[in-house]
Length: 96
Image (cartoon, rainbow, N blue to C red):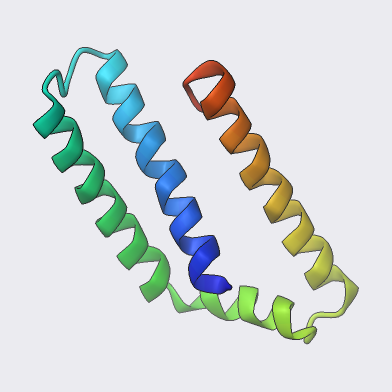
């Protein structure tokens, strides 16, 4: 489950970065957009997976070690991902 959260997060990061670069006039070709997207996703996934504090904290939340606060954090993280997906779908950008 943790891997799914990491991969969804990196997918959203990739869509945001490549979308912003495309809006700015960079990455005009499909090959450039595809290469940039894969590169950003691989780098961000490797960073989040190697960043053990993030993974350990989420795993502790899933296991119930943090109690109700861990479950509240997971709920808030899920809501954040849903809102991010909605913003990318509705407005074609991440609203910051």
